[in-house]
Length: 272
Length: 301
Image (cartoon, rainbow over all chains, first blue to last red; front, side, top):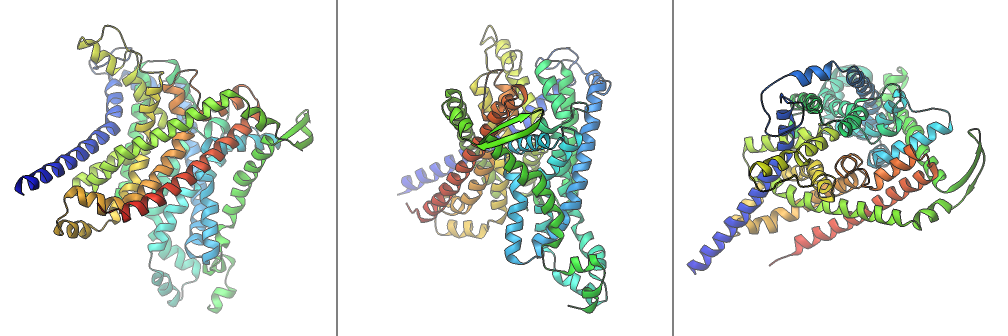
């Protein structure tokens, strides 16, 4: 009896141990490649090799003295800002309708808004490229920004809607009872309470505007090429540690984005 | 409704209404930039267009491009490869992702925080950057090869990059966070009193995992699988960078047809096939999730 119990206990510990070992392996797998790249970006040698030797900021200087790369970063920054502003302007009102409209219209609306995000990026990119060509609109920074806005609008709508649904409707009602017009109630009560969600949504829309490749590759302008396009080309052409430094810059941006998220809705609020 | 709301300024009426009016601008924009383009894509894929100097003269319904695609063996190998790769990626992500979610469930405050940081940071990092990291690791003079040579295990670099395996490794690592996030969402809502009750009734921890946690986490696995399948099936970056020049998947095929070969009808058909098969895959995953939910809840050993 006891032997059987011990055997059972042993199996249980073994099983849980294996599961936790896999979990630790997965977490290491997520972080180690980026750590390696950051280490290599400080290497003094002009080729990629491991383990890195010495320490230099030369490759970072080279990135910021590279006119094409700086131009591409600036282009992508502009796209990210335009996408974010468009998603706030169109997404927040849509979220209001999604959270408060009549039930039947609400479901249909949510599906309609989320559908473009569910379509593979390259399919949307190709479709917009073809349609633009038919009406005489060629690929440009604007076509890229507009298409990306439509692609990620769903993220903003979802984030703001889920926040709205958890707000107490009595708050706005109280404002109305005190004589506020619906607009005043919205501006002074609801909007401030929505700010964290809007900020969190903005982080994701900006990152998508800055980094997206699948939609961008079909819609970007040829004069102002955005960062992902330049990055894709440069990664395939050169093995200079400068690419690692460029990656290091992008990883730093991701960390900044994550800090913004954790200060706005908290990291565990990202999933709502 | 108060009189002010009825007679007030336009914006007040909009905000006080229960209708879908605030969404109208977005609805119109989505119609122009998503719905119409998608219809154009379908019409390009399923018609013969005669045009002169960029002006369409006639357009007739035709299955010519679809038939040409289906009789081309390159299509079959490419799509079979893409589907196989996406399915393998999804399964491996489930296998590697579920334990992380379990660790999140049983872990303390700091364990949970670390898991969230390590999962969300990659999602905010450019896919090209994350794929480049694998070039650095798997390349001819990369981390693995130099380490193995220094240890004297091999004399010259082993070819890892530009193989199917390199693509698979990259695919799994890049899409893993997308699997973990929905699982964590399920675990956050999980009532740990159920686990205590299960333990009090004499269940081992594995037993609790199998009969309490797994059934409740299955919908999260389904959501994660749907996301990972869609993204890995239609990804462009990983096969392009880790598969070498002639490694085609469905997405790189669309790109080559549209951008290099300028064969728009062909590209449109490929994109439509890609989307249709993706949809079928998603329906299949939804059905399997339903089955698995019922099976894990009914199962009693």
